[in-house]
Amino acid sequence: MSDASLQPAPEQVPAYRVERSSVHGNGVFARRDIVPGERVVEYAGREITWEEAQIRAEVQGGPHNHTFFFSLANGNVIDGGDHGNEARFINHSCEPNCEAIEEENGTIFIYALHDIKQDEELSYSYPLIYEGRHTAAIKREFACRCGALKCSGTMLAPKPRKRNPKPKAKPQPFADLVPAAATVQIPQPVAAG
Image 1: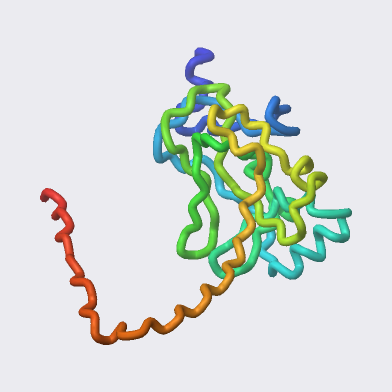
Image 2: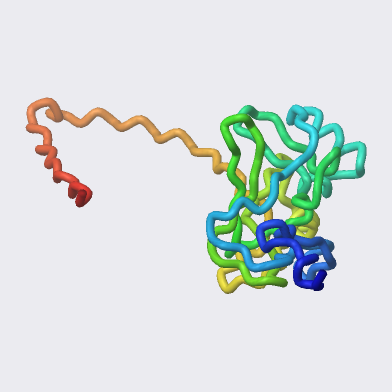
C-alpha cells in the first residue's frame, strides 16, 4: 500500500485549523484551498437569551466574552464559549473572506465569500453590539486590528443615533391658496431577462 492511498480525499481534509493569529489571539486558518460559497464550519455553542448573555459577560468581568456571542434573528444568542467549537476563534475583518449565515432552523454557518488559499486566515465582519457607553477604554478593548485598507478601527457596531423630533412647521398664511408642487414619478428600469 502506498502513502498516497493513505491520504484523505481533498473533500475529507478539514477546511480549517486553529493557531495563533497576528490579528488577535487565536485565529482560524485554511488547512486547504477553499472555494467560494463553500460551507466551512458551523458556529456552535449553547443558545441562550440576551439577558443570560449579559449576566455571563458580567460574571466573567465585563464585555470581553461578547466576541463569542452570536446574535440570532429570534433575539437569542449562541454562546460559542459554552459547548462551542473552533469557529469562535474566527477573527473579525473589515474586508472579510467569509460570511456568517443564519439558516432557517437558527444554526449559523460560515461560508467562503471568495477563493481562500491554504494557510490564509479566515475572517468575517461581526460588528459587536455593546449597549454601554463607548468609552475610550471600551474602544481600545474592541479595537480592530484586521489591517484592511478601509479598516474602521473598531469591532463595535455604531450606536443608533437618537433623532431629535423635527419642530412643527409654522402655519403659512395663504398656504392653502397656493397649489402644491406636482409629483413626478420616474419609471425604474426593468431587469433584462
